[in-house]
Amino acid sequence: MAVEIVYETHSLTEDNEKGIATGWLPGRLSDQGRRFAVELGARRRDTDLAAVFVSDLHRAVETAQIAFAETTIPIRQDPRLRECNYGELNGCPVTVLAAQRARHIDDPFPGGQSYRQVI
Image (tube, rainbow, N blue to C red; front, side):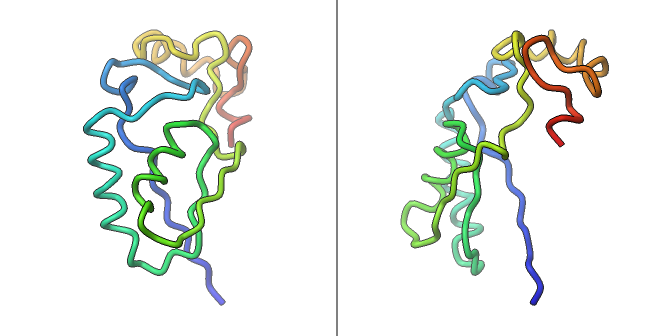
């Protein structure tokens, strides 16, 4: 029996629109992000999904709840699916984070994780 895994990211957040690197902060979907979540549901709800697995961060849960609101597809939260913890840089401008990314492939962000740890 083959298992197919479909990957989708959380929808557009207010932080995304403002150029903020949310990291492990909860984040909230923007108005456009909520519309995109509805479109995600329309694309995926009739594709025989057995379950939806999301990180426990608010923006991921909000995306799944909107997308699959009118289905019986179970939504399972798992903190192991979180994105990178930028530590002291959670919530900083993306431009600040981008300038430091290459230094944190193996070395954790101060108070956070390295990209390799996320993998």
